[in-house]
Amino acid sequence: MMTTTAPVLVFMGVASTGKSTVAAMLAGRLGWSFEEGDDLHPEANVAKMAAGHALNDDDRWPWLDRIAEWIDERIAAGEPGIVTCSALKRSYRDVLRRESVTFVHFTGERELILERMLRRQGHFMPTTLLDSQFATLEPLEHDERAIEIDIALSPQEQAAEIASRLRLHPDY
Image (cartoon, rainbow, N blue to C red; front, side, top):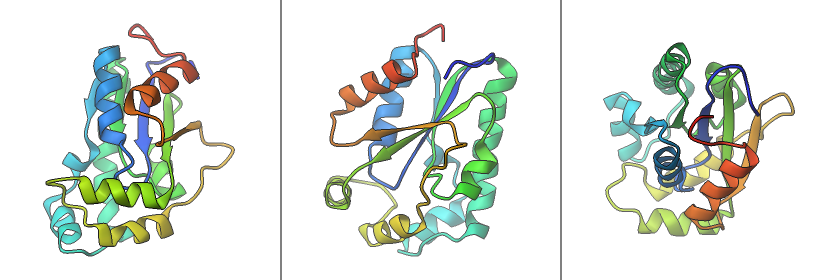
């Protein structure tokens, strides 16, 4: 995983897989920058999802551009970082791919993810959009630098596994 530049991790997967929880935990442990990708959505996207409508590609491109800008800022500054982004399609991941980017795909059973969605409070993503997320999700391909993490593990176990598998430490 080690590159000549500071690593940037994109925590990806469908909604309610725990990306934000684990990202914040790991970034805190490592002393890395963290960005909640949902906070970079244009207001129109949030309103659309909150109304129960799935985003289309035209909705996603400006959001992905904002995430790519955040990644590029980390790289330019020589700083490691973690950002969350569903990154469901290969074309979306291609917008974010850089030499120093590794995708961390949070995977799990639909039933577990739905259960988590039902418990989540104050988020704009309704449970009715979960199936559209699974329908949009394209598997990682062999040329994408990535690992998969099982969401059945506790957040602490997930963070430890990511750090171990990618040989991460505060000084990267």
